[in-house]
Length: 243
Image (tube, rainbow, N blue to C red; front, side, top):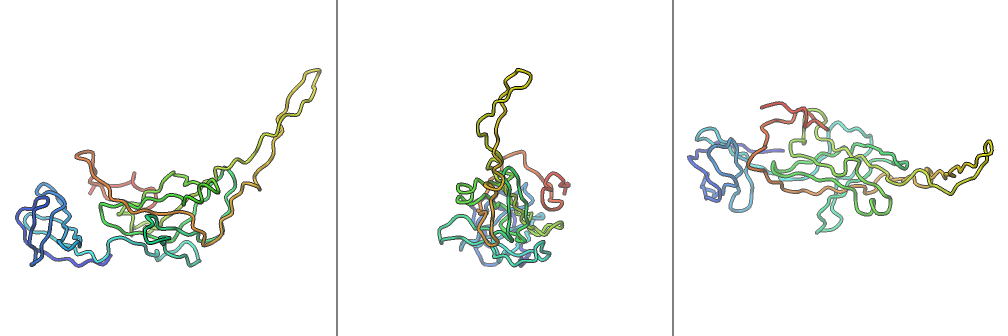
């Protein structure tokens, strides 16, 4: 994100205590001292991220807060629309299939969206299937819910490319009674099975809305937090290193 950085002086800062920086009024969203970082909320609603070093504060003015962009190094040679809300009050931003997809019953298919998302540090983008996809086609996300952290954006591994993996929950076979046969004077019941692979294969067309993303704020606990940085991209949170 394009941010403007300014250095100003401040002595003490406590939550909800107004502070004047460069002639503008700010309110702290976290207490200081004994924290290396703090969020400032300007009185007109604009948010500033601030990093404190002794009595100097580096104020990063954010001109963008949350949204979607295309990654520069695309996996697909197809133009895909950015996620869009269906109505003005919809919570979810719909993600579109980049190409035709077939998912056989009891199987899963992974694809890259070629889209990345930026947001505030205390926010997360949650992904789930669209309700119509889940109800009509018995599809779900293979990881049940997608969690896109703010530091996934522009990571050095894949630039924050969001991947989606859909699983088809429909059965691949169906029991259709039993066939009785006699072997060496013994009666054996053999199950008769119908192959439902073709019938229950879900076909998704390029451009179909398959998932939705919702921006949500999260809270930190008093303990059990981390001081680690993201190391790379998809599935890398367990590979983080200490700052």
